[in-house]
Length: 195
Image (cartoon, rainbow, N blue to C red; front, side, top):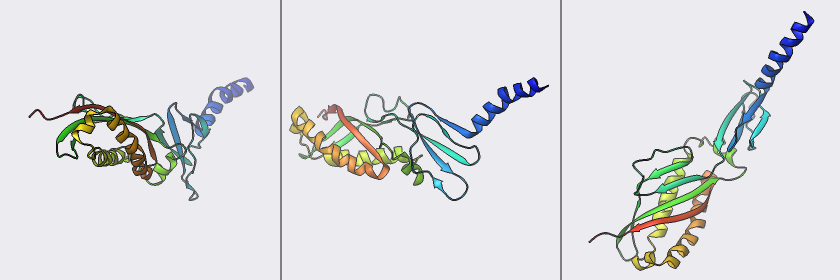
């Protein structure tokens, strides 16, 4: 009988206790812990991949993607692809250049949540909306900055790269509000009107 109880404890109770006291944060994910009782709220720490103390009923966990996110403004796949956790497909940008021509520009932006700042997104209640807000901010910045180029500038690789280099810090400043940081901006295609 003692062996039976020992078996029950080893096989059932220990794993059950472990699963109720430990939270697994999957790979490529940032864990954010909230204490439900005692008014402590969101723990001001991002939890990396692995096992962390998380008592069921006392802690609530939010999982944020640690992967690089992409925003695509492109003609080729904007209607054929759906949004995923880290990719956002949109129609290409329509930009009025400095010399008053309208051009269509395909652009991709790579960004990620700032290291150690995912808990801020959850604390402010933005974990579900930050992707749309980042897309909106990026669209505004790109439209403002790329419209400073002329049609001739758009045809010059040097001018385009210089404009992208000067746009990246402006974009990062705009994304600070959502605790995100852009890594790069890539102009994929420029289409001039056919008239």
